[in-house]
Length: 195
Image (cartoon, rainbow, N blue to C red; front, top):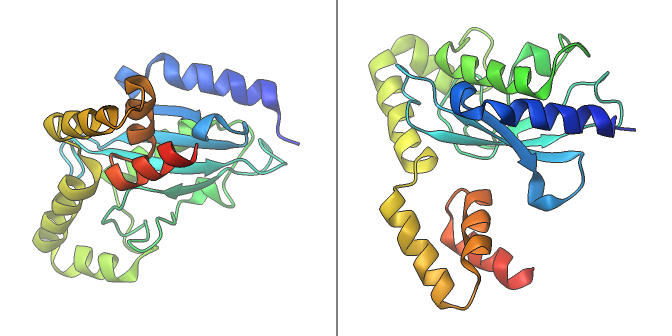
């Protein structure tokens, strides 16, 4: 059984300094406390700079004695993150987890992983080979994917909000739904209509 009071405390602590740390956590669709959504800012001086990356977080029944299950929702070009499904290769999310660690430290570790890939222990062998053999192409591809999948222009977002509001949905709900689906207008419309 998930320790609810610990998770609530961790959520509060993580979100307290999100402007400084660049990481935050929220309940996934206001659902169970064992299903969360994390966001991390792309680190400066990396191909991921300026991007906002969304992570799906599932807390197992044994949390905090078992590691959280994390997976990138935002597509990212990185040796330690699957370009296909967002799976992550990071020791603290596996055998190096400790109950002393928190969701915030896990997200900060993911942010650090974006800055310092470990291509010798890859999750995505194709990306790792490119990183090792042709770094300029790797960096250009990672920047392109960050632009394409991790950045939403405010003008584009405002246009999406306006379109959905014109369909009769409340603006606050539209904004939160668009944020939860990383700005995907079609997915937002589907969620708004079904819920």
